[in-house]
Length: 297
Image (cartoon, rainbow, N blue to C red; front, side):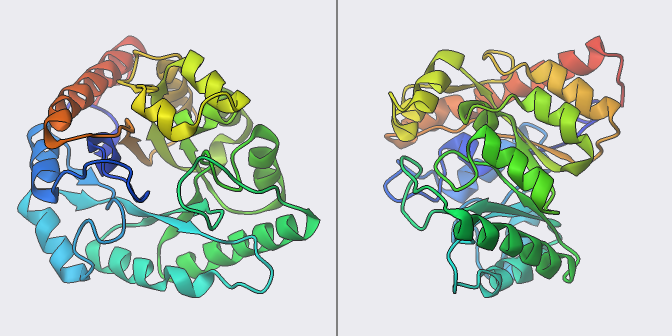
């Protein structure tokens, strides 16, 4: 890991750990964190609320025990409903990030429903409320020394290509460039990188099988079913063009975190046995990419 010229981190979702109710079998933190450590990973996102200890000191101590730092935390927030203030809802997450050394709040424009298989349409008032609240959430995080980024995400209010570009054009929120979710939502992540590399505050590196992603985008297949069917694959094994995106980001001067993510649904603990091997394969692809483009540690 130390020979990679990237700030590389991991996330529990690569081990099937997800905030969606009844998503699948949830591996215990001790197993996930030790496998991250053994792969040479030095930092992680926190995973779903309650997966790691909610007490900041306890969380920091747990991560330290495995030689890991904290990158940030994923925070789905309902930001489009008039009369609902999402800012108080991020206070606890910000407290934990500040205390644990994490510096990125990964916002998703949640629908208010469970799961990511359906979403309502926003009207003009909803869009006005969402854009204003995104800027307010950025300001609230900045006041605590934390960078807030918006994660365009399948099954949220910012999923499709026109929605991603409207946020970029009409708000100040930095972007979590999630290569997989952008592609599934109909947005070319390489195009977004070229359009607004200076707005990228965090990168989630995912690779996807294009045929399954297209079925989700068309509405022919639900998102959760596509994940179960193996839509996400190790970096380099899919159709996302990871090497070109990484090269473009580095050329543009991006020096933030690259977080490895390969969403999966586990039926049992044994299903988690392939997780570490897939993360290792992704690391190998990044190493080969860096060697090919002449970027060294």
